[in-house]
Length: 400
Ligand SMILES: Nc1ncnc2c1ncn2[C@@H]1O[C@H](COP(=O)(O)OP(=O)(O)OP(=O)(O)O)[C@@H](O)[C@H]1O
Ligand SMILES: [Mg+2]
Image (cartoon, rainbow, N blue to C red):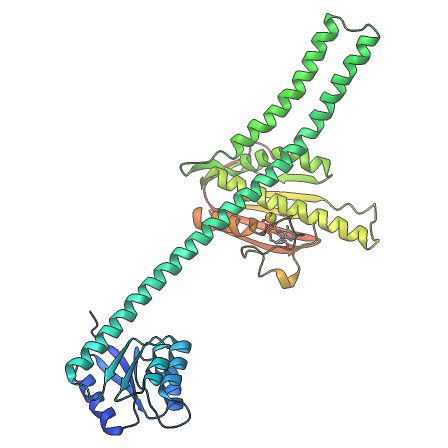
């Protein structure tokens, strides 16, 4: 089980110390890293050698006694301690017990006692370390799961925002149609022609609202399997879904995929859509922020239009590259290194939780083997999603 170990001895009686050293080193694989006689020296030696275990005399001459040295070594470096004691008062033993040592050895001790106690302490420590590591890994896994869950909730909030934007226009139209029937009735215009026109118009609006909802459900239907999909088509899809929102905010979205009709990559389609949506929402948010900042400092110049998102899809060196460029002012230099951290956000309380980019990075890099990164450009930011491309189809004629 334990076949080698580095052991430090702290003992101010030289003969006892030497005797213990030779007993320990008689075992193959076991070395004594240092023999020290004072607490202060022991702490320094432990820091230098990082032994696996320290045998510590409880009573040491000098300012720092064995218990204090042990507390320091165990607390700072996590090294387990076995106390050596000849005769100690209950008070000292009680104080020593508070430092949770891995064992005690009564001096003088025989070979067997020494080796059993040392090996047990090493074994126990190793087991504890395994357990700690497993717990830590589990904690990280749970944390990541939580962040992804939160991102889903946050995305759902954003989706509702889009749906309500998409519904605004048909809802208004429907309101007008319904109001009109009252007037029409008053003026005796309600005949069967009027009614069928009424039903046709109202149904058109209702259909458009219902399509928004089913579009949403199709767009984010969970995928069970990775499969090839065309990112050119998918980007179009997500943008048309966002159209109601971008139009009502006068954000001008342009898609360029000059020369390419389709670029296929492999992955979970709904995750890719989620990434595009996260990046689009970030750009829209940045644009809204910048507009507000400009109007607050009185520099709102109506001839300067803020609100353009350009999307480019290209294929290069067997990578498909999606680039989303906005004019929302970019990421301040000092924050650039942090925006992909979970929970990092510059948005007002309640507006963002700061998981969009973190989750997008996990989806692109861990799930799809790609890369997500950004750079600041003139007046804004450009975010890149690079994915291993499986095939590209040139367009018949340039599609702009
Ligand atoms: N296109 C962009 N332009 C400028 N800053 C950006 C842009 N995209 C992201 N950022 C910055 O990065 C931060 C983190 O973005 P992220 O998408 O992770 O979180 P969030 O948008 O703040 O909140 P959430 O996405 O969880 O709703 C943002 O708060 C913002 O400061
Ligand atoms: Mg975001």
